[in-house]
Picture 1 (cartoon, rainbow, N blue to C red):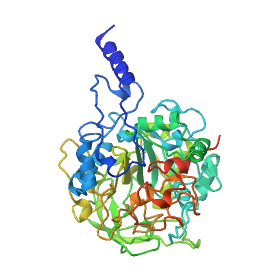
Picture 2: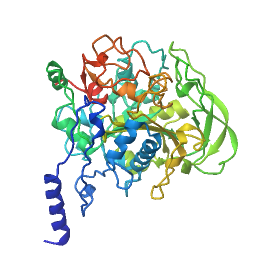
Picture 3: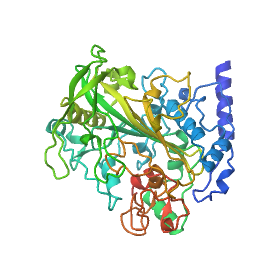
Picture 4: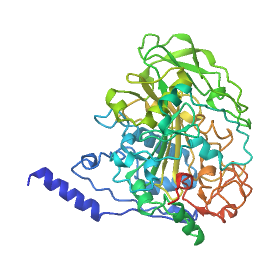
Length: 495
């Protein structure tokens, strides 16, 4: 037996015997949260992807490190330490998967695989990425649990060309989730990825079944997820290889007090992207938005503006190869094609590009979770969302061309509320501006709905969108909390 095989067997034995995950209850009080057990990491001599294709979160970016200090910073509201940690998580999750041309999270299973009826196999297997979906977009799932929020979202009717080409994966006018991408119901191409520990936690505890959630609710037992649970929501934007693609960019287009719809379709500030690089730095006329209707189903105008041109290197991006296209299932292709028609009035294909426009990264490193969200900006060094960005010479890619908001369980502000923490791309299309990641995620629970006694983004029990809520808040007593994770109640399936 050669040295490699011996090392491989030794590593497998270490992993099997070293399950030191710390499981804390989401009901943990603030005082109890100050003591955090740090998991010991074991260096191994073989890459995990040799076994499964899964690439874990890389070392050197703060993940699961110095948790006691991070908890103390959270309890005391030390935003410098919090934000430095958040920046590192963002940069780490976007590091490249060697040889694939995608970020490492692309090797992780997504929520479609996690909430399949049958066993989905190991994380990273092709089997674990197979298509299983009701056809509802992520936006539609979110809208089900809202009451008084006046976000009159536009209507994205599928282009007839897409309907004709991908009819086999369309249900009730909506494309099913694909093996690699999920249907967000608009231009943004979504993927909700899960760490291996998160995937295993959902499958082994059968948290993908409504019957499991019903049983826990009957016994008044909250869900306790493992400490290495990571869930992300990443958004790509389609860019054509030829010409200059117009992309909306957030410029504080609406005040915090604006209660209505503030999604990117109604922004009038754009940038241009020129894959050829020939027009970089110039100001040219660009446009986007085709075939989209407003809330009342009246055609929306194509957005046109004079815009500064940027190159692909200013973004995290991926060029679609023939191997990529061959690996996409029909739903993946339909999602990409529809997005490109709405954005560019053209189909997408081999040779075109996907740029990272926004991303949520949520980790259960602390009992109260770490919540961070980023979006691309043409002014990445300006304003409060650029603050406390650390030096990360080991990081690959333009991670510092993005802005970041964080929402850890810090003490309430001077108003006794949560600070606003919103991603203009992701929340802008479904939530008002004056909202908070934490206020939303602490509500996650079972059963869902928009009436009293159910879990929802806003309901009669907990109407305030910036109210300082904790798992112990009286307005959450009637629901079974799902540990800050909406993916569980939103995606659970019946047997």
